[in-house]
Image (tube, rainbow, N blue to C red; front, side, top):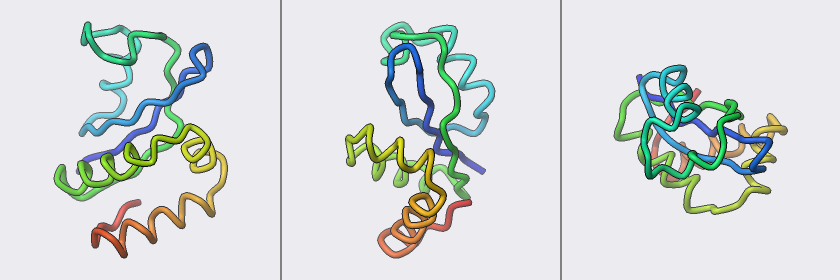
Length: 102
């Protein structure tokens, strides 16, 4: 089981998209700046905006790439706040990539 996670920093007013098998551990790593060159070093108040559960890493990487291609804070905020937008994303992922996400 893999997760695509979208985290948000209120202090930086910024989103970050990633994939992992352990969301809690990965969030700690982002907050503690475990990876010196990572984008998330700009803040330490990252919180999970939303998660998408995928069956395997290959599917998670496709979902992550799809979200990153959008390059839109407005889109990510809408997905975070509007369940119908998130459901529409799931439909798009099924139709485009044959990927089911929870």
